[in-house]
Length: 234
Image (cartoon, rainbow, N blue to C red; front, side):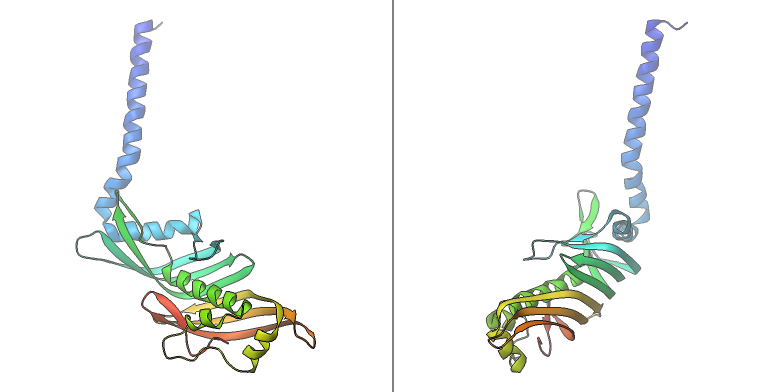
């Protein structure tokens, strides 16, 4: 039989072995990352979201844009001089929700990553183009619901006409307006986005109640880091 001293030594060896294994678990992935290069690390970080899930914060909106299913493909990575920032170009297929609004998209995405504390992390978000388009769409929805012409004017490029015409005049007359986007289907291109919106408008006019549904095509163009509506909002 083993003595108490022998058991103590054996226990010490087991503890030391576990410590070595723990250190390896932490260091080996990082060493492999150094060997593979930043391109592979950024691609891996982006693809891991397909397993872990993707929840995107939309500025000014209390609920996130949450993916039910998404897929990044055809990923290429350009590492900037200095090796601390990289941009992943990809295609993105996304199905998810923003509150009660169904959101689907297909097209191109551009995802900047930065190297911080030994890991590559999104500079802002994994899908900044999609976030920018959904932010503009939700801002438009809110402005239409409140009939806020000034807010709508900020969603078009300078010099473009704002909202006008019979549809806008009727919207302004409506009381207890509720403008709901039931779905946005987005096609993301390099410099623009094409959107099909399924909407529902409820309220009341002096002459009648209103509860209508419809479908509308919208075009947005990229201006800096934001998407603006062109040629019109309605």
